[in-house]
Every structure is written in structure tokens, then in C-alpha cells.
Amino acid sequence: MRWLVLAPLLALALGAAACRDDAASSTPTPTATADASATAAPTDEPSTPLPTSTATPATPTATPTAPPTSVPTTAPTAAPTSAPTAEPTAQPTIEPAAATVIDRGPTGRRVVTLTFDAGSDVGFASEILDTLAAEGIRAGFGMTGRWAEENPELVRRMAAEGHGFVNHSYSHDSFTGLSTGAGPMSREERWQELDRTEAVLQQLTGRTTKPYFRPPYGDYDASVNVDVGARGYAYNVMWTVDSRGWNALPAADIVARCLERAEPGAVYIFHVGSASQDAAALPAIIQGLRAQGYGFVTLAELLGG
Image: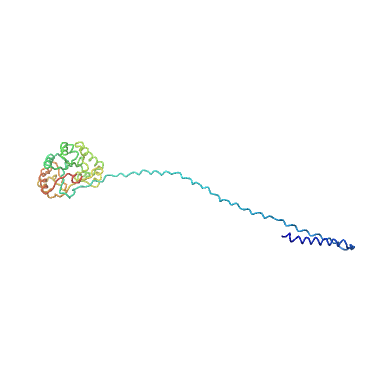
């Protein structure tokens, strides 16, 4: 468009310049005065340069750069840690329970148990066994190991006739020292007393005294129950009725005492020694108890064992 406008203007300018040249050639040239300043001929207007078409550079299109894909980093696998081995816990040593003191059995049945201690001389042991055999009664014998060693045939007879055994120590020394004035035995001394008697009875009869123990003189305390319990004696067998025959009580008094104190589940204690009249009183005691409606059972039967 700019060329279309400039072209006529340029043609007019060229035509005017040609007319001036013609007029100058036909008019005489005046003489120039000395002080006249020379006039320079006008110079043609410089031609207007053609506009140069400037190409607009194309705006570079940014090539979309794909966002860098993060390379997944594999998390390092933790090396398996073996679980620490727990230190073995030492198991506490559990001792058997202390012996339970038994002075009577359950009272639901009208039955009693007869027990006989043997710790001094042989006394009336044979007579007592004869009476029990005649009456069809099985009893319990709490003997010392020393007495058993001195009377092996009687011990074998007791076993053969179905009587039970109660460990009455070996020497009949007090476990607490209460009745003898001596100091209490140590645990080891008590165990020796029990073990010696058990060994003698096992050797003579093949039978055990466990779980029944009767303390010499009836002396015991909590430590005695703990110690004998730890040796396998679950029962400290005391008594409900003491005949007191060992105290030189006459036979008739023994009978009366035993019958008056009768009760269901009663445990009777007698002695076989020659100082006691228990053997003489025994037949009347058995008859009197039966008359009151009582039957006779062993310790094991009384306690349900």
C-alpha cells in the first residue's frame, strides 16, 4: 500500500525538476557580483528507500517437555531380623503342699477308724491283731522304724491282714523338741527319720507308709507340716479320741472314755506297749461302738483315698 501512495508523488517531483532545467538553459546567465554568494544547486531529494519486508520470525513452539518420570526407587528391603531368642525362664521350684492335719474324717457316715502306735516294746501287739482279726476289722499302725526292725514278723502279719501303715518316725524323738526339751530337728534330720522308717517297711512288706505321718508325742508345728509334706506325706494324722491307756488308765475307764466320745468320722489312738491296757479294753470298745451303730474303716477309706 505504501508503494501505491508514493509512486504518484515521485512522478510529480521528477516532472518539476525537468521544467526547471529547461528554463535555465533559455535565460541568459546574469553576471555574478563579487560579493554575491554562490548558490548551490538544490540536490535531489533522496529517494525514500523501499521498505524491506521483514519476515516476522515464527515464534518457536516450545516442544512440550514430558515431565521427567521419576524412576521408582525400590526401597531397600530390610534384611530380616531374626527375633531374639528369649532366654529360658527358670521355672520356680514348686514344693508339695504342707501336710494337712487330720484329727477326724468326714462326718457324713457313722464310721470310725482305729489306729495303734508302736514305738516302745512289743507289748500286746499280737493280742491286738488277734482281736482285730476276730472282729473282721482293718486298722492302722503307726510304728517307728526301730520297732519294725525289732518285730519284723508282726509287721509282715499286719501287712498280710490288710492293716495300713503310718510313719511314726524312726527313733520316736520329738520333731519340735517340745516334749523332750531338746531343740527342734532340722529339715534334713526330719527327712532322715521319715526315710529310714519308709525304707524298713518297704523292705519288710513292699508297702509304703505314704501319705500318712504321725508325729512322735503328737508334737508338730507349721514347719513340721511343711517338711513332711515335701517328703510326700500329705496327712499329719492326729486323733479325735485318745484312750489314754498309755497313762496307766484302767481298762474299764478306757472303755467308758472311748464310748462316751464316739462320733461319726472319729479317729481313735491306742498303744500296743505293755504299759497300756488298751489291748484288754479293745473287745468291749468294739462291741460298744457297734451297739451305737458304728462301723470300722481304714484311714484310706475314711479320707476317701
